[in-house]
Length: 468
Image 1 (cartoon, rainbow, N blue to C red):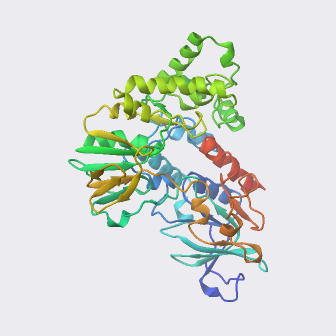
Image 2 (image 1 turned 120 degrees about the vertical axis):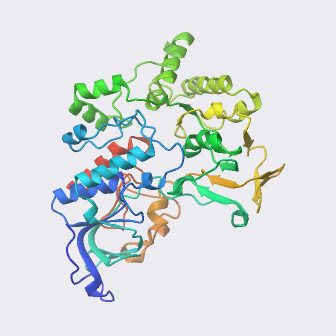
Image 3 (image 1 turned 90 degrees about the horizontal axis):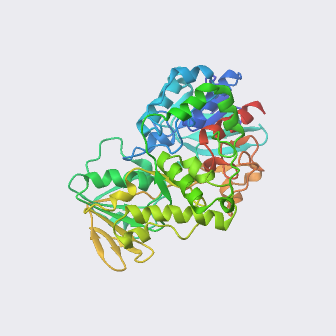
């Protein structure tokens, strides 16, 4: 319950009648921000949430590109703090789409009456620690300045889009789209020549959908990624049965697991399995579409032994060659520059088969890098592609982008967070930063964050911050 506008004590130069005094300010209204606001209210703190968007959702508010969905099974990608919530919401699919996840977060905000504590359409323009007052002073783009004892960045690890770094972007005469900031209106790509730059998670999800509409789709790939089929559909009966058998135990196991997903400890080692046994385990995992299992459970040495890892990578590359008809395209889509799991693998639906379509071309930027974007399309060092639309699926300014690029954060002795992090982020467990009192990062750099199930990591971090 944010307090009314009252006199400020944080700064003599501030208009005292226009300062909102609260115990805690929270930036972000996604999974993390909503849960933190709920916990703060239950603990008796006054709090205000701030978000540049016009409603709740965080990353899922902005990521509306075709094919957007989570890659953790939704039975796991859910809040766990309220047992009654498990009965109030049922996911329709194994891997939920962006619209369903957004509805879920809206349902959460309504169920716990969180909207009234959030200022939407509001960007923090500066955050300054006042040593004398022992409080943070936040200026905003909309509404009153905020004075708070604690400042929590619940801005997400993958939420600030990475801007293009290609000459000529402003010269392009067609339409430019970003997967991380997809328009809220329907985008009609029928009959258009579309170029997609990027083949990470967003690109892998969007490319098959775009190919179904476009007259021709040209995919510009710098780094191929490992991907496996999602085999999406209704929630899997075995996973749901495991959850329903003992919900409390299921959630507790998730909290203590390495990846935030309850899976039994793997005791199989690659060297102890025959080729046939390894292939059998792989084919079973491939057929089930379980990313966490294939990432960590095929054999125990795949994550810490080069030979064990290569066995998995070879099997995945073999699948690409089986699916993609053109050998040159298949080779370009097969990663050889990083071990399996060194970059987060993706789940795909018809991604590899899309390259068998007559209206799809893959450009391997390792062989022919982009020289520039022109008024009519994209030029590599070998050829020119005329385009009507360019889609940047170039991902996010990961981990630190949303924390330090959005606004200046100034701590003790006038030091800015950007300067302190100029050689890379330094945190305590991804939660706090020396010299910035009462500043808390949720799943920040140095924490498990994207290497784990974010829903579990978020609740653990938020509970620690509120209970400390």
